Image (cartoon, rainbow, N blue to C red; front, top):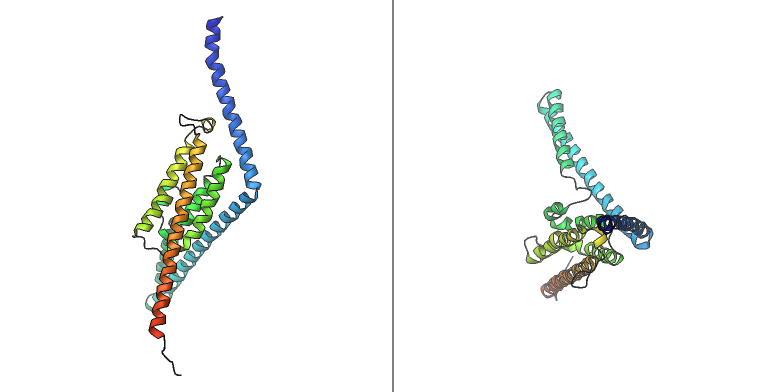
Length: 254
């Protein structure tokens, strides 16, 4: 009797773990639905739509430029070569350019490799898209931090476009956004769902580590934004002082 009970106990334990896992998955789906319907979820959806619209506009502009270049080549060749030759060359060029544009089009959801290879002006937008794709299953506090990071990246994007890619500030922002943030989220995601809310030896759950890490990233982005903003203000002040000293007292005659 005891032997049979001993054999059945691991099976019961495994069955309970499986049931708990299914329950966690169900709760995660329900939480995701409620978050999408919340004001924060709708705001996030709006930002994602705007990002998709910007990518589509860039793609259309590049395709139009490729078609325009092919037409110009056809017009010039038509003056120097038979019409059939000019048309064949222009068509081949159009096919080549359109293929290149489509191959270089931004991925719908960038991975860690795409973040690491993104240009500095596009890094913030790519990170917002990547972070939006990682929301599934995150605890509420982590979602709040992710929303704050997305807003911070939106504020930071124009300044990154003006920053020298070789500067230490650019390297710090790139490491934070393209390396450390994905590493944090990926390390949390590989933890089984049923274990994410189980306290470890340090008294913290994996969900707690995720929230704390995202909070630190948000704070670092805020600091970077302030520093870059102050640098821009200093440059404006210096330029204004320069113009004032240069033209003060000068008179212009028409």
